[in-house]
Structure formats: C-alpha cells, structure tokens
Amino acid sequence: MSFAIHPSLKETVVFVTGGTSGIGELIVRGFVEQGARVGFVDIDEAGGRALADALAGQGATIRFEPCDLRDIGALKQAFKALEASLGPAGVLVNNAARDDRHPWDEVTPEYYDERIATNLRHMFFATQAVAPGMIAAGKGSIVNIGSNSWWEASGGMPVYTSAKAAVHGMTRSFARDLGPHRIRVNTVVPGWIMTERQKQLWATPEKLERHRQNQCLPDLIEPVYVARMVLFLASDDAAMCTANNYMVEAGSI
Image (tube, rainbow, N blue to C red; front, side):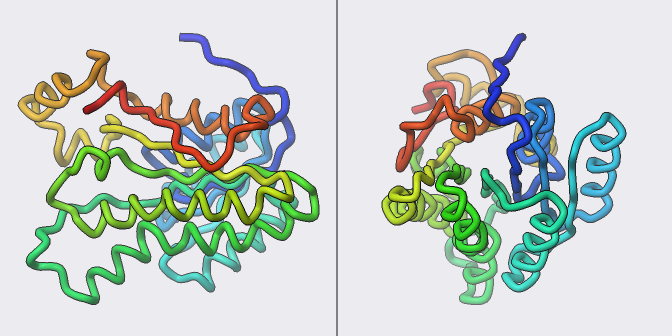
C-alpha cells in the first residue's frame, strides 16, 4: 500500500512520547520517513536506544531520551535535552499510555493516581513544556492519542477509560487557549489496534471475531493507520483542523 508524503513535515522538529513500541514506534518511523527531525521519550531505555540507533543508521535525524513520564520533572528535563539537540518542537504527539485491565472494586486511591499519571497527566505537562516554543514560532500542532474504549462503553479498566475520556476535554481546552497562536490541538481516536501487546494479552480468536462484527469494515486495524492520521494532522494539509476527534476505528460501534 502506498501512503502520502507531506512536504511540510520535512525538517520539522517532532517530539513523541511513548515512541519505542506499538503505535508510538510507527509514529516515530512515520515522521522519520517524512524527513522530520524526531525526538522521542520512553520508559523502555533499551528498546528506545535500539530503535534510535537503527533509524540513525538509516540516516534519520533522531534523538532518544529515557524517561518515566509519571515523573514530571524528568519529563521536563528530557524535553530540554531533545530541544537542545533538535531545536524547539513544531509538533508534539502525546502518545504514551498503558491500558492495563483493573476491576473497579479493587482500585485504591494510590492505583487510581498512578493510572492517571500514566495515561493523562503527562499529556498536560508535555503540552505546557512545548507551547512556549510554538508560540514563539507562531504555529504548531499537538496530537493527543485518545481511545475508542470509552466511546464503546468498554468495561474492565475504568480508570483508563476515565483518563482517555478526559483527553478529549483537554484537547478542546488547549485548542481554544493556543489557537490564537496558530497552534492546533487534536485527538486521534484509535479503535482496537493490533499491536503486539494486544495480540499477546487479549486478542483471542473469539474476541477478534466478535470485534469484527462490531466494525463496519472487516479488516483488523494495524498501528500504521493511526500513525498516518497523526502525520496528516501534524502537516500543513490539516491547517484548519483543530479541537476535534479523528477516529481510526473502522466504523466500530
């Protein structure tokens, strides 16, 4: 399958959170293929360094910083290091998240806070960190990764779905506050994406068949299609797109 090239992304500085594996890896690779200057952070230091080394060996301008995004101080330091190496971010992709299952009646206040820190809080502070540079440039694009799970009223992970629902409110508020500076803020909403994590933990034949029946399209969704939507929203092709949700869920109901 052939995909589009977005000339406006060439040499653009892009920061990606959670870029080592799954959807995040495809986002990193997608921007590299567009000729962007890519910095990414992830808690998986070995995996992040391996990906950065592999892409650098192919000629990419890329920088990896290990970071536990639950530590906002560490996040800010990592972004400073990326900026020192690559320049201020013109694009931020808030991708990092973890959809661990958890029964509602076993959630403690400590677990709740940790899940919010893992799936929501860092998005706010990553946006706060890059916004001054985008304001100075007079433009920018921020893409937050949401989830179709709460739209579908999925159970079994209520703190995760609460956090992902909140992403949409955060997106629209930042779009209003940053819009006067021509900074666009959008949410990409993946359906059930066939990452290796999903395949290993939850994608049984029975669940996959049931899910197919809920989609308008018969094909399971590969991570590359989420990455392609992110690339579009980051590019000048989407110059008048902001404050909205862009679904990549094959018409799931």
